[in-house]
Image (tube, rainbow, N blue to C red; front, side, top):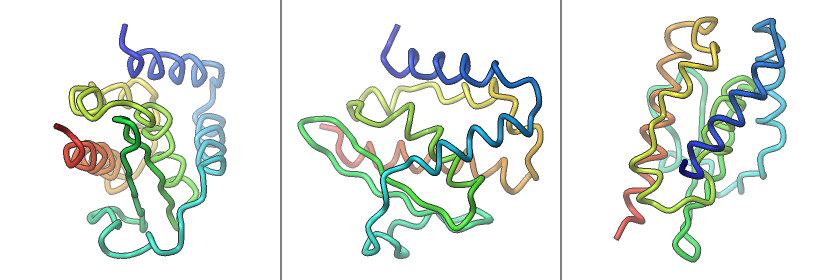
Length: 138
């Protein structure tokens, strides 16, 4: 099993603890609060994920062949949602990120309780993270 798949399975196991969807969202918001801070200079149009209802900024850098992400949002739930992806993809190779199956989000049960625009934001976030990884692929 790939490292990304293992992280996805671990995240899904963590979410299974919570029976109520509001508890799951509280957990996700907590993930967002634990993200490394995004430098102020990265809060610009170049790092903004377009199409999201809330403002979401995503930065990526490559170190020693691994991609490291940082993100922030003006919405706690949106910041938590991008944290889901960062927890799964951070510190992985560009190729591993590009080939990762991101459908694990469907298994979280979170999308069912989101407005359609917020649910669409999950797809946009995953796509943007793969595009950032593509820039580092060799």
